[in-house]
Amino acid sequence: MPDSDVKAPLLNSDPETVEDVFDNTYKEKEGPKPPVVIVWRNVILMSLLHIGALYGLSLIPVACTLTLMWSVFCSVFSALGITAGAHRLWSHRSYKASLPLRIFLAIGNTMAFQNDIYEWTRDHRVHHKYSETDADPHNAVRGFFFAHIGWLLVRKHPDVIEKGRKLELSDLRADKVVMFQRRYYKLLVPLMCFFIPMFVPWYMWGESLWVAYFIPAVLRYTMVLNATWLVNSAAHMWGNRPYDSNINPRENKFVTFSAIGEGYHNYHHTFPYDYASSEFGWRLNLTTCFIDFMCFLGLASDRKRVSKEMVLARAQRTGDGSHRSG
Ligand code: ST9
Ligand code: ZN
Ligand code: ZN
Image (tube, rainbow, N blue to C red; front, top):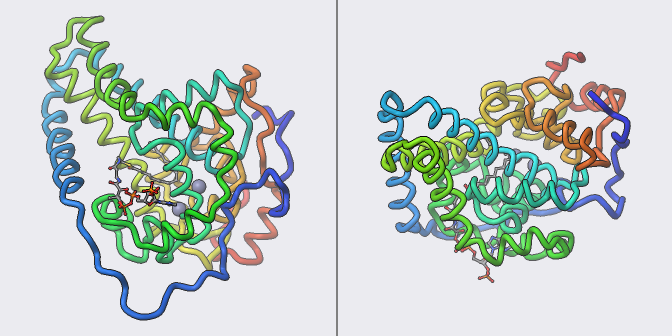
């Protein structure tokens, strides 16, 4: 792995560090919890989306090979818009990206349709800072279903909004790409998430509009959504905790595989500023390969990385004993 510009980790007091470090001074409010308010519009839309995706699965045998290849391309492109974009770049600032790369990632991110980058990042920083508490948007203590999809079907806990409003987000407001995407999001999402994935196979190689809508658009969107949600659900419940056994996030191989490198979640919550989101560089980590390739092309720089010594020391101090170096 090229590491010419890989930097030592920043200290929490470094001005470049974003607010993604766990705040152990926050205490959940005592007394009864606020009532759960179901948003039926979201329940209906998410149900229809998942029924459409199941139908899309049944159409795979009649789809052109090129359509299936295009669906894989759209999956990887939209996934990178989340992993390399909203997550490692905008939420954690774990490396720097040039304008063309930020535009590329924002397009992929819009294809992924997981709320705009500003909203995604705000929710994600609040997730790291108040993990597994009322102020965590997808608090995994409330169970697998809530952490996976349930949190998008109900009104947020007031503490999420209260704590989220106090976060420092000026870096996002200063990024023209982020603010442009936010401003035109309602227009750009139907175009990038549904229309383009459907139009290309129909126009370029004569796929039926029906198949082109249900496979590269609906099925691909639903699969990337679920792969992402698994990081919040499965990777907060099942797996080892080699780096910090005091926190819930785990190392989960299945999630790592399906979320192109984002399942090393015990490592990630312990060292959120590491651009590789893992101790092991390229291993099962397409996102890290992509960021390194962008550095090679001169489109990215300043990758932050945690040293081996620091990882080992932390694993010995707070890990669950399952750490294997190398
Ligand atoms: C989706 C997101 O799926 C997925 C994110 C997953 C994150 C995973 C992270 C894991 C690590 C990375 C791994 C990546 C792996 C990728 C693998 C790929 C293969 N702070 O929202 P409202 C304010 S989206 C501060 O309506 P309600 C807000 O600004 C799917 N303020 O709350 C507003 O204020 P104002 C598609 C906040 O009413 C007010 O509060 N999208 C915060 O409770 C009300 O906001 C959907 O389905 C905050 N954190 O409704 C949309 N939050 O009025 C779903 C809110 O002043 N969302 N505010 O502007 C909704 O419909 C609603 O948000 C709701 C809550 C019903 C869920
Ligand atoms: Zn994160
Ligand atoms: Zn997490």
